Amino acid sequence: MIAIGCDHAGCEMKATIIEALSAKGFEFRDMGTNGEPCDYPIIAEAVCKEVLEGGCEKGILICGTGIGMSIAANKIKGIRAALCADSFSTKFTRLHNDTNVMCMGARTLGPGLACELAEIFLTTGFEGGRHQRRVDLITALEEK
Ligand code: RB5
Image 1 (cartoon, rainbow, N blue to C red):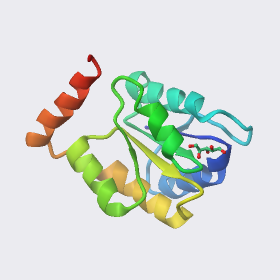
Image 2 (image 1 turned 45 degrees about the horizontal axis):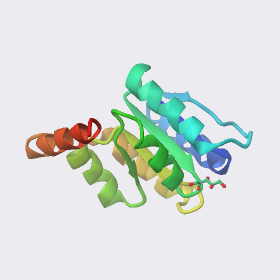
Image 3 (image 1 turned 90 degrees about the vertical axis):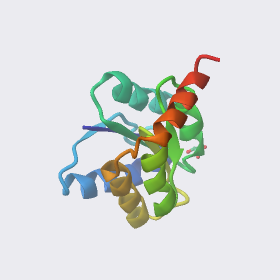
């Protein structure tokens, strides 16, 4: 199960991703918004909560640029969120950073690229090894 959410800027892109990836077998828990103008940190918190406590494997957040969502999500303990805009970074943030939330900009990416990036994010595993030590050091920063 994948938690997904957006602010008013990202509704269309969110619907496109849900439709395209549901057809490939992914399941989504839609945390809103669905048309109503809203403040993106509230949606970021709702999606991240589903990842941390609600049994969702990963989260996808969409706003105009993806930046506000990524700033908000990365304030939450246990979340490693990446702003994704190209396939190389999207692949390597999973391989090396073990990110559990991806953020995308609905006003900066086309729908085809967004769906492709979401699929890369959801299907790429963490490499572990030396990268686990680095992820542990990131986690330790949460206590400083
Ligand atoms: C909303 O207009 C816009 O500020 C928001 O979608 C996002 O881009 C913020 O980072």
